[in-house]
Image 1 (cartoon, rainbow, N blue to C red):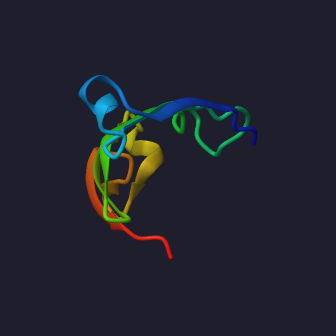
Image 2: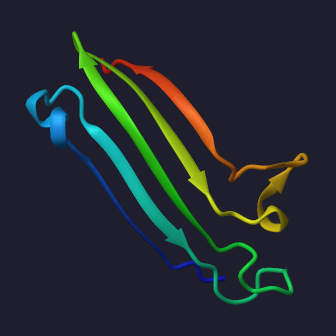
Length: 98
C-alpha cells in the first residue's frame, strides 16, 4: 500500500510575536493519501487533511505552550474503541530539555 503525503509548517514569529522571539506561532497543515488496496471498498476512506495552530513561550529555559489540531478523517477509517481518533483536540504542555 502506497501512502504519499505532503505538508507545510513553521515555527516563525509573526505580527506581535516578532518583537518577542520567546513566543513563536506554530502552525502546520498536511494531507495524507493512500493508494492501492487498503481493505476498504472506498479507496479514499483513509485519506485525510490535518492542521495544527499553537503558541510556545520560552520562560527561564522551559517551553510552555498550547496548540489545537484537527482533521477531516472519516469515522470509517479512524474509529478506535468507538471514538474517531482523528477528531479535534487541544493540548497544553510544559517541556524542559536536559
